[in-house]
Length: 459
Image (cartoon, rainbow, N blue to C red; front, side, top):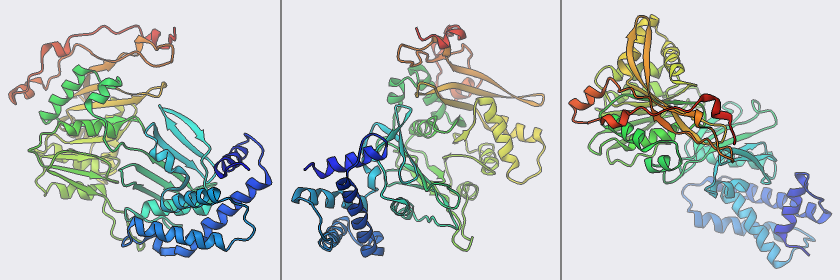
């Protein structure tokens, strides 16, 4: 007789169209479903009892499993198969079920659950399907409820969408019936316990040593910086790196929808927005927190992401002495970032002339760091752009560093380009020099850009 793990693997392979499944495999899967249901039903609310330690809960689960298995009749399991089955179900009940191994795999950066029977992952920037699957929709819903309850959120038919986080800071989004057809859908963007550092970004080619030194001096010099890019381009990672440059003797206040930033300084205050309760009351938005932060005597304000009317409050803060503020914005390019800010300011509900908004932007924002996820799966900084000011009705900018796409790709399809100086010295150099921060002339030595046509030359 094959081992239980081999039989379960064969069953999973068959469900994915990779093999035949026997009646014995079907019986094992059905037994697993029944035992899983009995344990969850038997333990009930105690599964989420925060007063109970993990060790106590594990003992309760194993006792319940033994009882449920004893109640079964004609179960053809050897002693080793029985122990393996109990261990597998206990892991399902106590942890995050079949996605536990994926969350533990350091090479996996994103886990995407498209319903109970389809689990995808992102590894090295590429999406692939896995053999992992949940017992049924109820099993997946229970895992989702477990995740969101850990951070005081809820998900049900009245609130079918939720953003949450795992204990390690990984970002979670879940959406269920009636909005998710064929769902529930669960997306987890993993964050390393030890966040990527400047050295890591230089090693993987996202930054050059010169541009990293430039960004460090700009952050220490209290320039207002916006990190922009598309979804999954690495904005939060870049924000973490920029925040790490802030001196230890400054008071930092971070504001996020779900706390994800991992600042190592001692004087950090973390604020998190709160959704409305069942009666539709008690909501605290990012904008509310930004306004409150101005009364907390911050040296630095770091907003995880500006996506609405809080952009106006951020501009007001930047323009009223709160220099060195940092935030992220979704956009496709530095110019689009400026247009997005205009749109978000209008979302604040005030009737403001476009020119007044642009003057606020030009006076508040010093620099835009734009990231892009390239087609080879890597995440690179493609623009470091200075915001110069107003020229007529337009906010003018100049690129200080640009990614050289023209260097082509290697035999594996990986881009060979890197950030290069455009040869233009930023106008805020004088401001930094007044603070004792020197920007060496060599930092802006112009570098030749390869022909753009070579970008698609795969050799």
